[in-house]
Length: 244
Image 1 (spheres, rainbow, N blue to C red):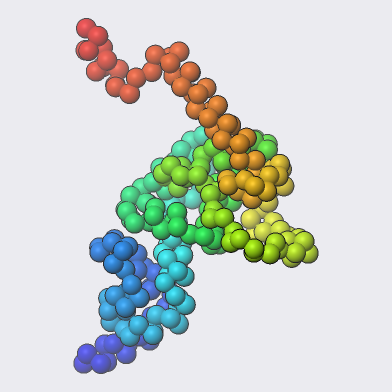
Image 2: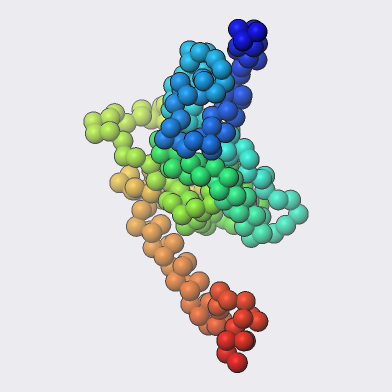
Protein backbone atom coordinates (compact mmCIF):
# COMPACT_ATOMS: atom_id res chain seq x y z
CA UNK A 1 0.00 0.00 0.00
CA UNK A 2 2.83 2.39 0.87
CA UNK A 3 4.60 1.64 -2.42
CA UNK A 4 1.39 2.35 -4.36
CA UNK A 5 0.93 5.69 -2.56
CA UNK A 6 4.49 6.76 -3.37
CA UNK A 7 4.12 5.77 -7.01
CA UNK A 8 0.80 7.66 -7.29
CA UNK A 9 2.33 10.78 -5.75
CA UNK A 10 5.29 10.64 -8.11
CA UNK A 11 2.91 10.43 -11.06
CA UNK A 12 1.01 13.55 -9.86
CA UNK A 13 4.15 15.53 -9.03
CA UNK A 14 4.64 18.74 -11.04
CA UNK A 15 6.56 21.98 -10.66
CA UNK A 16 3.68 23.87 -9.10
CA UNK A 17 3.16 21.21 -6.46
CA UNK A 18 6.89 21.12 -5.70
CA UNK A 19 7.00 24.90 -5.23
CA UNK A 20 3.87 25.03 -3.10
CA UNK A 21 5.24 22.27 -0.89
CA UNK A 22 8.58 24.07 -0.59
CA UNK A 23 6.88 27.32 0.43
CA UNK A 24 4.78 25.52 3.03
CA UNK A 25 7.79 23.64 4.36
CA UNK A 26 9.87 26.81 4.63
CA UNK A 27 7.00 28.42 6.53
CA UNK A 28 7.02 25.51 8.98
CA UNK A 29 10.72 24.81 9.52
CA UNK A 30 12.49 27.93 8.25
CA UNK A 31 14.48 28.50 5.08
CA UNK A 32 17.79 27.46 6.64
CA UNK A 33 16.50 23.94 7.17
CA UNK A 34 14.97 23.55 3.75
CA UNK A 35 16.84 21.13 1.49
CA UNK A 36 16.02 19.07 -1.55
CA UNK A 37 16.21 15.92 0.57
CA UNK A 38 13.90 17.33 3.24
CA UNK A 39 11.43 18.49 0.59
CA UNK A 40 11.49 15.05 -1.03
CA UNK A 41 10.66 13.52 2.33
CA UNK A 42 7.75 15.92 2.72
CA UNK A 43 6.42 14.92 -0.69
CA UNK A 44 7.23 11.26 -0.04
CA UNK A 45 9.30 10.88 -3.18
CA UNK A 46 12.95 10.15 -3.83
CA UNK A 47 15.11 13.29 -4.10
CA UNK A 48 15.88 12.61 -7.77
CA UNK A 49 12.19 13.02 -8.58
CA UNK A 50 12.44 16.72 -7.68
CA UNK A 51 15.18 17.39 -10.21
CA UNK A 52 12.73 16.76 -13.04
CA UNK A 53 10.98 19.96 -11.98
CA UNK A 54 13.75 22.13 -10.47
CA UNK A 55 17.35 21.59 -11.51
CA UNK A 56 18.92 22.64 -8.18
CA UNK A 57 18.34 24.45 -4.88
CA UNK A 58 18.82 27.89 -6.46
CA UNK A 59 16.13 27.24 -9.05
CA UNK A 60 13.89 26.00 -6.26
CA UNK A 61 14.40 29.27 -4.36
CA UNK A 62 13.68 31.29 -7.53
CA UNK A 63 10.45 29.36 -7.95
CA UNK A 64 9.49 29.91 -4.32
CA UNK A 65 9.91 33.66 -4.79
CA UNK A 66 7.67 33.48 -7.84
CA UNK A 67 5.06 31.60 -5.82
CA UNK A 68 5.08 34.32 -3.16
CA UNK A 69 4.91 37.09 -5.78
CA UNK A 70 1.88 35.36 -7.29
CA UNK A 71 0.06 35.92 -3.97
CA UNK A 72 0.33 39.71 -4.29
CA UNK A 73 -2.91 41.35 -5.41
CA UNK A 74 -2.95 42.74 -8.96
CA UNK A 75 -3.18 46.53 -9.37
CA UNK A 76 -6.54 47.79 -8.11
CA UNK A 77 -8.90 49.03 -10.82
CA UNK A 78 -10.88 52.25 -10.65
CA UNK A 79 -8.66 54.05 -8.12
CA UNK A 80 -6.10 56.83 -8.44
CA UNK A 81 -2.42 55.98 -8.82
CA UNK A 82 -1.59 56.82 -5.21
CA UNK A 83 -4.23 54.48 -3.81
CA UNK A 84 -3.24 51.77 -6.30
CA UNK A 85 0.41 51.95 -5.27
CA UNK A 86 -0.42 51.94 -1.56
CA UNK A 87 -2.73 48.94 -1.88
CA UNK A 88 -0.15 47.03 -3.93
CA UNK A 89 2.65 47.72 -1.45
CA UNK A 90 0.51 46.66 1.51
CA UNK A 91 -0.56 43.50 -0.31
CA UNK A 92 3.11 42.69 -0.96
CA UNK A 93 3.90 43.32 2.68
CA UNK A 94 1.13 40.99 3.82
CA UNK A 95 2.43 38.31 1.46
CA UNK A 96 5.95 38.57 2.87
CA UNK A 97 4.62 38.58 6.42
CA UNK A 98 2.89 35.27 5.71
CA UNK A 99 6.27 33.91 4.64
CA UNK A 100 8.93 35.38 6.98
CA UNK A 101 11.76 33.72 5.05
CA UNK A 102 10.77 35.32 1.72
CA UNK A 103 12.44 38.68 2.24
CA UNK A 104 15.88 37.14 2.76
CA UNK A 105 15.48 34.88 -0.26
CA UNK A 106 14.23 37.76 -2.42
CA UNK A 107 17.22 39.87 -1.42
CA UNK A 108 19.61 37.02 -2.23
CA UNK A 109 18.48 36.48 -5.83
CA UNK A 110 21.17 37.46 -8.33
CA UNK A 111 18.81 37.43 -11.30
CA UNK A 112 15.21 38.56 -11.68
CA UNK A 113 12.81 35.84 -12.78
CA UNK A 114 9.93 36.46 -15.22
CA UNK A 115 7.41 36.73 -12.36
CA UNK A 116 9.54 39.32 -10.57
CA UNK A 117 10.07 41.32 -13.77
CA UNK A 118 6.34 41.16 -14.52
CA UNK A 119 5.58 42.49 -11.04
CA UNK A 120 8.02 45.36 -11.50
CA UNK A 121 6.59 46.07 -14.96
CA UNK A 122 3.02 46.25 -13.68
CA UNK A 123 4.14 48.46 -10.79
CA UNK A 124 5.76 50.92 -13.20
CA UNK A 125 2.57 50.76 -15.25
CA UNK A 126 0.59 52.21 -12.34
CA UNK A 127 2.71 55.36 -12.42
CA UNK A 128 2.68 55.66 -16.21
CA UNK A 129 -1.10 55.21 -16.28
CA UNK A 130 -1.31 57.91 -13.60
CA UNK A 131 0.30 60.39 -15.97
CA UNK A 132 3.88 60.20 -14.70
CA UNK A 133 6.58 60.82 -17.27
CA UNK A 134 8.94 57.94 -17.96
CA UNK A 135 11.75 59.98 -16.41
CA UNK A 136 9.85 60.64 -13.16
CA UNK A 137 8.58 57.03 -12.97
CA UNK A 138 12.17 55.81 -13.29
CA UNK A 139 13.39 57.85 -10.33
CA UNK A 140 10.28 57.16 -8.28
CA UNK A 141 10.92 53.42 -8.62
CA UNK A 142 14.43 53.93 -7.30
CA UNK A 143 13.13 56.02 -4.41
CA UNK A 144 10.60 53.34 -3.50
CA UNK A 145 13.34 50.74 -3.41
CA UNK A 146 12.30 47.53 -1.68
CA UNK A 147 9.12 49.19 -0.41
CA UNK A 148 7.40 47.93 -3.51
CA UNK A 149 7.89 44.48 -1.98
CA UNK A 150 6.74 45.65 1.45
CA UNK A 151 10.12 46.25 3.10
CA UNK A 152 13.00 48.70 2.90
CA UNK A 153 15.77 47.60 0.59
CA UNK A 154 17.24 49.11 -2.56
CA UNK A 155 15.18 47.80 -5.43
CA UNK A 156 17.88 47.69 -8.09
CA UNK A 157 20.80 46.55 -5.93
CA UNK A 158 22.56 43.62 -7.57
CA UNK A 159 25.86 41.92 -6.78
CA UNK A 160 28.78 43.29 -8.75
CA UNK A 161 29.79 41.35 -11.81
CA UNK A 162 32.83 39.10 -11.34
CA UNK A 163 36.14 40.75 -12.07
CA UNK A 164 37.26 40.01 -15.61
CA UNK A 165 33.80 39.07 -16.81
CA UNK A 166 33.42 40.07 -20.46
CA UNK A 167 30.79 42.65 -21.33
CA UNK A 168 27.81 41.49 -23.38
CA UNK A 169 28.43 42.15 -27.11
CA UNK A 170 26.37 45.11 -28.45
CA UNK A 171 24.47 42.89 -30.90
CA UNK A 172 23.35 40.57 -28.10
CA UNK A 173 22.49 43.58 -25.94
CA UNK A 174 20.22 44.90 -28.70
CA UNK A 175 18.41 41.57 -29.07
CA UNK A 176 18.01 41.29 -25.29
CA UNK A 177 16.57 44.81 -25.05
CA UNK A 178 14.14 44.09 -27.88
CA UNK A 179 12.94 40.94 -26.10
CA UNK A 180 12.61 42.84 -22.82
CA UNK A 181 10.59 45.56 -24.54
CA UNK A 182 8.13 42.99 -25.84
CA UNK A 183 7.74 41.18 -22.53
CA UNK A 184 8.03 44.11 -20.11
CA UNK A 185 7.18 47.30 -22.02
CA UNK A 186 6.97 49.54 -18.95
CA UNK A 187 10.44 48.56 -17.76
CA UNK A 188 11.73 49.25 -21.26
CA UNK A 189 10.13 52.71 -21.26
CA UNK A 190 11.85 53.89 -18.09
CA UNK A 191 15.12 52.16 -18.97
CA UNK A 192 15.23 54.14 -22.20
CA UNK A 193 14.66 57.38 -20.32
CA UNK A 194 17.52 56.98 -17.82
CA UNK A 195 20.95 58.59 -17.79
CA UNK A 196 23.89 56.20 -17.78
CA UNK A 197 26.49 55.65 -15.09
CA UNK A 198 28.23 52.32 -15.53
CA UNK A 199 29.82 52.49 -12.07
CA UNK A 200 26.44 52.71 -10.34
CA UNK A 201 25.65 50.25 -7.58
CA UNK A 202 21.95 51.11 -7.81
CA UNK A 203 21.48 49.62 -11.23
CA UNK A 204 23.27 49.31 -14.51
CA UNK A 205 22.79 52.53 -16.46
CA UNK A 206 21.60 54.54 -13.44
CA UNK A 207 23.23 57.49 -11.70
CA UNK A 208 23.81 56.21 -8.17
CA UNK A 209 24.49 59.60 -6.57
CA UNK A 210 21.49 61.21 -8.27
CA UNK A 211 19.11 58.45 -7.14
CA UNK A 212 20.42 58.68 -3.56
CA UNK A 213 19.91 62.45 -3.42
CA UNK A 214 16.52 62.22 -5.15
CA UNK A 215 15.16 59.84 -2.49
CA UNK A 216 16.78 61.86 0.30
CA UNK A 217 15.18 65.09 -0.92
CA UNK A 218 11.78 63.40 -1.17
CA UNK A 219 12.05 62.30 2.45
CA UNK A 220 13.20 65.71 3.63
CA UNK A 221 10.38 67.45 1.76
CA UNK A 222 7.92 65.02 3.32
CA UNK A 223 9.33 65.60 6.79
CA UNK A 224 9.02 69.36 6.27
CA UNK A 225 5.40 69.06 5.13
CA UNK A 226 4.44 66.92 8.13
CA UNK A 227 6.22 69.32 10.48
CA UNK A 228 4.24 72.26 9.07
CA UNK A 229 1.02 70.28 9.51
CA UNK A 230 1.80 69.46 13.13
CA UNK A 231 1.60 65.77 12.31
CA UNK A 232 1.57 63.14 15.07
CA UNK A 233 1.39 59.35 14.96
CA UNK A 234 -1.04 59.42 17.87
CA UNK A 235 -4.77 59.52 17.06
CA UNK A 236 -6.36 62.95 17.35
CA UNK A 237 -8.45 62.02 20.43
CA UNK A 238 -5.35 60.76 22.25
CA UNK A 239 -3.50 64.00 21.43
CA UNK A 240 -6.36 66.11 22.74
CA UNK A 241 -6.47 64.14 26.02
CA UNK A 242 -2.71 64.49 26.43
CA UNK A 243 -2.84 68.24 25.70
CA UNK A 244 -5.75 68.73 28.08
